[in-house]
Image (tube, rainbow, N blue to C red; front, side, top):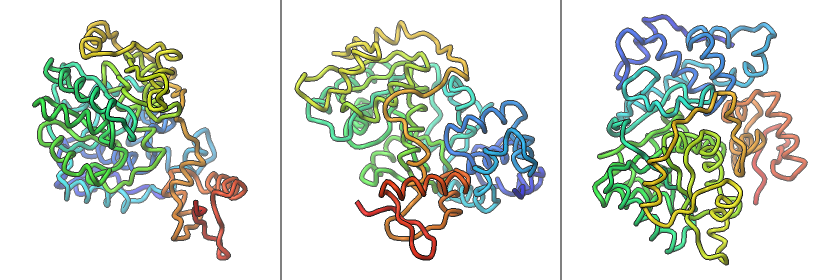
Length: 389
């Protein structure tokens, strides 16, 4: 791999005009931006290397060609280690006014450090820096929410906000959106975590909602500006929602809902976990009932139940190597490869590697498996497309 210029002058020039850059720390900050673009969210190998060597020296090791313990990861990072990739992300940040936040910055949300080597190397934010001493509750659930679920969510978010609690969620349709809107209506702070760049509203129908959240709270993302959300990134994003909260409450979730992935992260991190019960005949509440039965979740019927959980919420003591992200909703590398394919435009293995954050060799293996399963199609010229559904 060819390492971009990491000199202080080059770093200062690259970061010019980006909000949040601390004078005198440009070289380390620029190195973190490069890591931010070459490694997918939650890459534990990158996190361990940075923790051991620091971001600058870790990049130099990552760019070496010798076969060593980092060789497999190096092959995964290589397709993205280009100065123009970082330049594009920084240009997006300047255009959107996104603020860069790195460890050591007073704005850095220290709760995410509980993720150990899986913690973000950098974060991007639109909005206001929050009071980190304030209690926070994540309210998550199904996109296809029922009126019952949205009504319960609105009551919980409004009452918790009135009690000085910050409401955290993922800005999706359904339960997430209901939580944010209720918090805003109550005049309380709410925080959204996105799976794509903070400069790209997702879902598009929530562009106005995200602007309102940023006006009084904050919109965060681990992925660089310009990044598109993928299934893998949604699941990785869930660990940040869990880490940012003292308590995670699932209002409505199907049996295999992605909200169970957030619940699994909460349990791993030692966060308090609750679920709202629903009718036993409702498929929309099957995941909540599963949390109560299998995850040891607290039965939540009112904001009072959640406030009691905050009072007894222990500080997270999970060690970095204890974060194993078990639970429903976890995806695999094949999903990352399929996320990088288009049903219309053919892409070669190198392009798929760049988009997925995997090595070309890994991509070729997973493309072959996906083709056998009928989920990917290879063109006569060697390009790959997602199979039509």
